[in-house]
Length: 261
Ligand code: IPD
Ligand code: CA
Ligand code: CA
Image 1 (cartoon, rainbow, N blue to C red):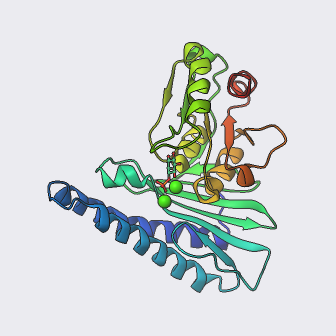
Image 2: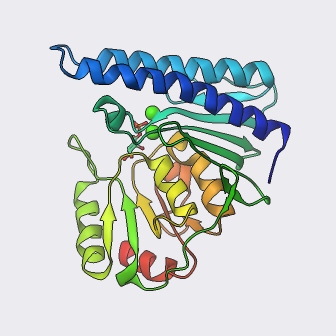
């Protein structure tokens, strides 16, 4: 099992932030029925989680940079290393009391993600990987699925909401993909989508208009579990484009052909 000092810091931090969020998640249920709803409460929980993570990581590694969803980027004294953090991925689920959300923490070195941790506190599932060391969930080594037939395969994606411009493209993707496969899921947390490909639960995942913090940890976990992970646009760049496609090696060519054509 990988266990570098950095990875240990990341796991400890993800668990700490996760514990706080889990307490807050209990409170959300009580607020659903109130006239104001849980919106402001959830925004504060999200911010608090990022503060906890930033404090822990910056204390442990004061020279590293920090990019989190909720605050301004902090340039590190060491320009080669930076944390990429989504304190709460799956906010809409959290807000609605849906138990599917996670904390995501990645470490980037010289532009490459070298370690990632995704923690789902509700299910107590900690997904993690370090470059070259394989991928894990809790004490178990994880691998992508072995499915090679589209008709048996399940894919995950994100559906554009609130008037997002990529709706026509996504509808076209679904039109091509759905008749050929066993189903498409939209669970609402991109970090967990990538972790689930790594664990062989989904056979593949694609999404547009994502940010680095949605994907960073998941990319290294999926790769280390044996997934093919590529920019959606051939020759593109995952972070710069905000688009990704990944799947097990056997299904990737057929899946990518359906999405890219
Ligand atoms: C969102 C989730 C969702 C994806 C959205 C993201 P957030 O992140 O990952 O699955 O479809 O594009 O913004 O806002 O819950 O951190
Ligand atoms: Ca996110
Ligand atoms: Ca978030």
